[in-house]
Image 1 (cartoon, rainbow, N blue to C red):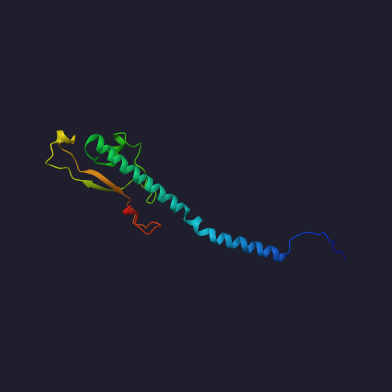
Image 2 (spheres, rainbow, N blue to C red; image 1 turned 180 degrees about the horizontal axis):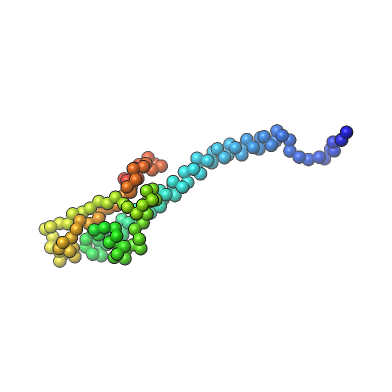
Length: 140
């Protein structure tokens, strides 16, 4: 029969069970945050892309005196390298709000072409999903 040495070291089964339980509790606490991280990242990208598009539309208006007819016109004019992707819908298609040209204004005074089309004054996401804060993405 083996005799136990007084200095023999190791973990008991009870100690291992306690450690596994603590790790499990910590994982359960952290899991909801980890699951939502990709969605939070997509929301941050959406906010940035919307801000960029709105800034560029305003720059176009400031430079040319009229709003762009399409988002592709911003690319063609050099304001954007490419139309940004909506990370929620994974598409370059955006909802747009148009401003009708004012027929009473003289085109020479506004730099607006005489045959001007309605211009884009705002953009929004085409997603029908809700954000983490409870607001629809289309209202951002």
